[in-house]
Image (cartoon, rainbow, N blue to C red; front, side, top):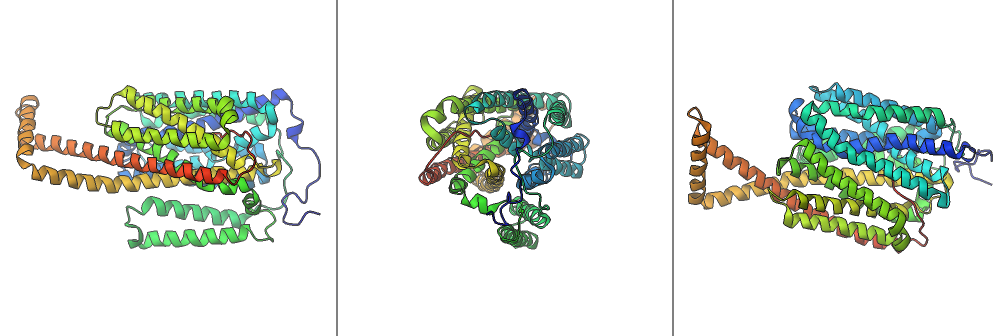
Length: 540
């Protein structure tokens, strides 16, 4: 006899609509949710291209503009954590339509915020809360609608659709930013959102994918989790700028985060809580999911760090335009798409989840090691594209393998909670990766700038010779109204800044390569605890 804490104990044994929809309807549902999921992932992966343009137009400094990413991640994490609870409450169709409305409303706000930082930040948080629903719902729908071997063909077409949109999105984003204005890029999402929302409304039946409890929503758990996420993201994002524990505000954020998380875990695990936000007891009993938390966190860290540092190098050291940077992002995403298809049809069958994961981390780490030796202010574009392409393949292999290890044992009744836990941990790792890279970049730039200026002082005669050459060039090119000496100092300053950034990015690449080594070790440790593996493809 089921216990009162079992989320399915009050359910009738009736069939759900997932067992009754036609094959054609399943394909249309897959296409509709695939459109909105692909456009959200493409926007999230590619928006870093626009940060330099945003910074000038909304009168923000580097710290303020970084909140464009941080607030999106905060909303995204809160939405992912509440995903299963929202679906149990509203049903899949209402939840997806509500999420599309919130995401669209946030995109409109971003379009209207071309000169307003506050509106831009609020709109990004709203977009994140809306966009956090797509990834998990897409994964659950594929898992429920297509069973066993019948899942291969739909997964193939879904992967192709997703990566066609993801590969084409960054260059179009760059064209809009270079030729019009960065805020026009947010209008790019609306045709996909409108078509996807119509197909979801028209063909996705109301109700639930699988039997769910009819108990009331866990408001207390939801509030505690949202407060904890806000405090954690604020602590990580503002800590370096506010000197960490020297700031009372940062200390308060940490205390609030610890208190809310502790209270949340105690409440979610309490036997009296019949319908928790996250079924932590069921998640903890899933050995494969528990064993892969470390490797999943490492994967998110590598993914977030790579996507954050790449556009900074391309636009601040190599001086590529938004369109050119978008082309490199497309190369990375094309490699990711090729890697996903290779895993789907070949690598997973030959190597299994564990060794596919290890191969992915090795390829990703090899790309970072190559960056250490190849990155210069004038590295050839073909070499950059080759390294980025290989890193895309590595990310795809690692994501496919880890999701296989983590969610392969999830049963149908709890697949939503398993997917939520996996993607939540991965996105939390991405937040840590972005924060860690930002902190490391700030500290290494300070260190390298001091060292470069110290070397310049010790080689003063040589530096003076170069300054005279710069001044002579300014005098010839700049006209009589220009100050050659000030122009020479400005050229020298720009050279120091460029070299400082380059050395800092190389240091970050080394750290990310070390992270990949830890990923291999944690994957091997997790693989030893898992007895059975079968195919399960990730959605990003």
